Length: 184
Image (cartoon, rainbow, N blue to C red; front, side):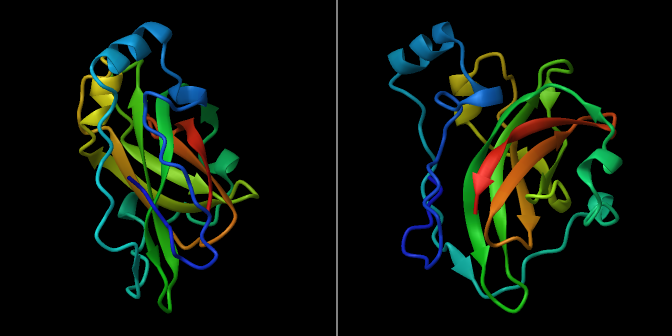
């Protein structure tokens, strides 16, 4: 479960699992019946630490030159995917503040995880990036059409407040798909 309880100025994002997420991660009623029949989706345990004074990690090498660029200029094509932006897993409160945002993404056209993720600020400027591959056993449990249990993603951003939109970067490196919204 993703929590930020007890942090000053921290909004309380609700952890949204793939069985109940809205938007691009909406689940078909027949899949929801299966999930509920199995007792629902197991939610991950809360992390041991929610804040650290460590600096926010830098973006991955593939995205270093994208930070600060308008999303539309960096990625000219819009595609479709399934996914969700779950919440803040870690807050960096030291001299280089920021947040680690997590979620999941799936490219149904290629039947594979969304390989990379970028986040944008309120002006649609790229303000963070990360990769997929994090283990998410709950995703294929809730969505049998998703065949990998590594559809989770993690993004690091220097943003600490305000709205954030997450986009999956599809395998061609030019097409993005919306993965959700989060208010930091």
